[in-house]
Image (cartoon, rainbow, N blue to C red; front, side):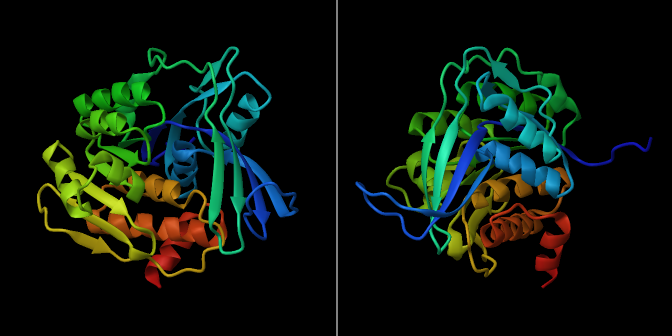
Length: 300
């Protein structure tokens, strides 16, 4: 058997059973409305990123927590079907698996109602951290801060590049995790919570001052604003122009593609374009793209 030469990315964080409804309009209650279509599948920040790593040509190991209820095992099976290694995830006895209801309108905008589960356990002692030794990058989200902190510290000690999805969460969590990370890639709400009252450039500089090598914020149609510790001059990578049909998961796919590009040791300018292309295709199609699709968009 030929050796597996794919770069290894370890991802840690949320995994959610997504119930997606395509609707004509997202209306205020009380109301009864009919959905145009429905889909059931794996979601969650780090889980979507893991699928992106796999579909774009990497070998992804995912660490997450689900319950031993009706959603737990099928959710892990759905990730495995996408080529993600879920063999070391935690199936919590008596736990309730996270689920979401996602309403998507004809313009591709969505409204999400999430239930983050119960009794999944917060202690990270079960994590097989030595798997990071063979990885070329580590990615996490802030949904399980105890696990993220433990793995980020381990990865930094081993010299493995780390990336965080700086999504909306409690400010105290971001304040704790950002100094542990090499690449902090925020959403607009996440950056505002990390550095309240500061303009985006000032907030990104704060992340660099706290130890990050790269700090960035994805700004939708405005593209991605970023800077590095080596050159703190603000840079902007334009967004790819696509007709969005479903923006759910586009930011997660951006982060997965970003982590894979870091694992491949692409220059940072190429990392930004590669991730932007992957996120744009996800928004256009409502599905995670393949490597060939991303490279075609980059060439175009």
